[in-house]
Image 1 (cartoon, one colour):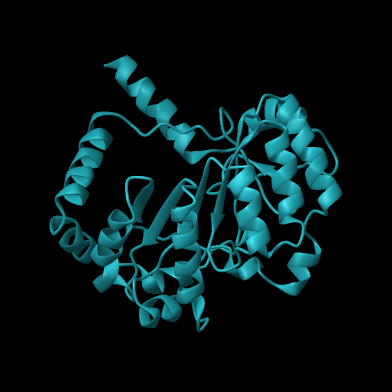
Image 2 (cartoon, rainbow, N blue to C red):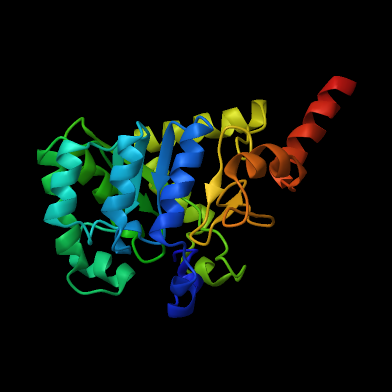
Length: 274
C-alpha cells in the first residue's frame, strides 16, 4: 500500500541523489535555518550511505527523525543511534502476528526482525513511535497493536493512520486496501482514546480549516533532488542539482500551486466578507 512503490525500480534508484549531493544539500538547509529533518522513503536504511547522511545531519545540530520499516536496522545503526540519538525513530507496525505483518510486507520473517529492533530500541530508551495504517488485511489487529505499543512503556508512542493516498503515478491501486468508514468508526468506538481523538478532530475541522505549513515552515526533498512543498504535493519541484535551496524556497515556492493553501485563502476571504 506504500504510495512510493511505483518508484522503487532499478532505473529510478540509479537516478537518486549521490551522497555528495545530499551532503551539500544538508549544508544549505542548515545555513537556511533548518533545525529538524525527517529521513524517510521508501526505506531510508536501504541506502548504503544512510549512516554517513545521518551522522552529517546530527553533527550539524539538526534534530533527526527516521521513518523506517524496522527490518533493516543493523547493530552498527543501533550503536550509532545509542550515541548520536535521534529525535525519534518511527516504525511501521502492521500487525502483532507474523501472519498479518508478513502478509502486508510480503516478506517472510519481517515481523520477527521488526519486533527484535522494537525491543532493542525500547530497552535503550531511544525515542520510538510505532505507526499503524488501518488496512483491510490488518483491521482485526489494530487495537491489539495499540495495546502492544502501550505495554512497552511511556517512552513509546502509537499513531493510527486511517487513510491511504494515491501512489506516485497517481493510480488508485493502494485504495484496494483502504478501510471503509464504517470499519474505521467500529475500531475507534471500541477504544475510548481513539474515539475521543476522532471527536476532537472533527470538532477542530468544523471550527477552523487545517493549516498548511508546506512552503512556509516545511518542505520536502525527494530522492532525485526535487524541492517540493510537501510529500503530498509534487505538482511542481525545484531541481536542487541545478540551483540553491534558498532560491528554491524563497523565490520559487510562492509560485507553486497548493490546493490546501488556496482553500485557506478562500475561507479567509469568506470570513472577512461576513
